[in-house]
Image (tube, rainbow, N blue to C red; front, side, top):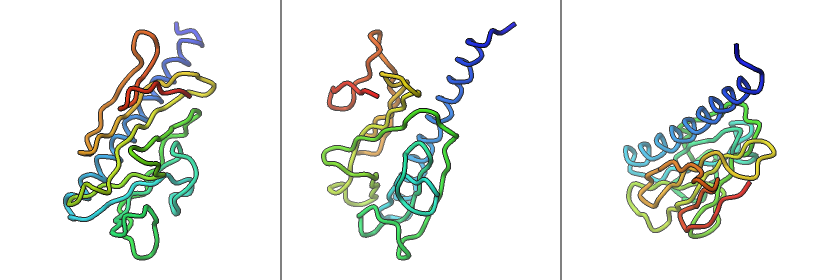
Length: 161
């Protein structure tokens, strides 16, 4: 029979995988929408799935963003509102080369796009469970802790919770 701690760990791993898959699917949808529509598409964090803002762990809005400002307004077409599974941990985002609180995908001009890293930390953890690194070509790759329990971002900097 399963003991309670091992069942809890199994549930946590399943939950971690579900969050990772949801983020990867959202990024893929935004990338494809930018290419298909030949326009800029933004992804922002959203608590209420109506406005940008809140926590990345709660969900995202994906929308056409010709102004490339990451602001969802009545001029922008909403592509998707995606609620993430109830996360007990944190989903964090760090953009490069400059700080943005959203991601911008463009089918035409890559001068105003950003790359960066998402990473997920379980509640009260000091190291992340996984990281999703997005390059300037909008390709995402998943990284896991090395033998020392560390994940490095695209610049070689250790991610912390």
